[in-house]
Amino acid sequence: MPSFSSAHGLIAARKKGDPVLVFAIDIGNTTIAFTGLEPQFNEAGDRTSTSASTEKVLFQEVPFQSGLPSDYEICFMEKIPTQTGKDLPSFMEAAEGILRRNVSPDKKIVAAAVSSVVPACTPAAAAFAEKICGVSPVVVNCHCDSGLLFSDIPVPEKVGADRIADAAWAAERYPLPVMTADLGTATTINVVSGDREFLGGMIAAGVRTSLNALRSGTAQLPQLEPGYVKKEDLIGRDTAGCMLSAAVIGAAAMIDGLAAHVEEQLGCPLTLVLTGGNAGVVSEWIRHPYIHEPDLAAKGTALIAQREHAAK
Image (cartoon, rainbow, N blue to C red):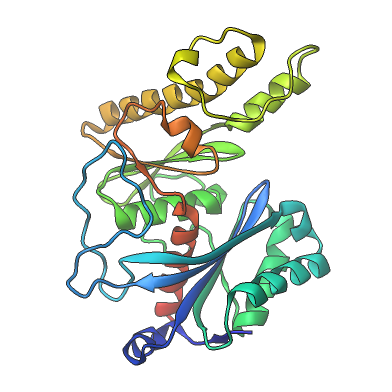
């Protein structure tokens, strides 16, 4: 197993050239993602991007906070079904296998965090992270050092950990105000102001969830998987085409419309960041300039882990 080193040792490890990792466990409604991230630093003081694609957008990246990474390189990411995480022995076996396959003994884990929207899985994930790190991991919530403010949220404790992780990295990495759209089981949208206030957002059924609801709630509509819709197939010519067009292009239209309404309310343009498993198929139809950051949640979870450990 890899060794653990406190976040205070990160600078020393960098000077020695020791390989370091931040370990993030992101528990979603469908899958649990285990991600090893290597902090990236640009000593000149400006950011570098290793994975975010910038389709339909030109932006000036913002200066990063001293001592924190300018980005993360994804060293590995593996997923297991969320159902597995509800059983501690099964979770431990799967998680240990992932680490054995991906992490060499010389790697130093400088921070670890769990972001979970499935409370039944959180104890197993936290226990595993503590086992490999030797300290209690950061469990992402509104009280963590995310770099966000929640003063306008009546009950910030009810804001999902996934939303906090998404918003934290978007606010740290991209120009404010920023709106994130995470297209997973649910489509979760977050808005962060120019002052890093988490303003709230919107939650809608995801693309796959919408298609599943049509199948389960009707007598004759078929079961469909999300997929790309060609420009010439905007107007569906059969039942399946109609369903897929509405689910995919409808999601894009919703995001475009919400972004326009939020910009009108804020009185200024915003940065739109897309992520989640269905972002690829939906982004083809989005008109608003956007950034596609597939690892938004993992990077946000890693950032919160490092901020928390650095504060200790």
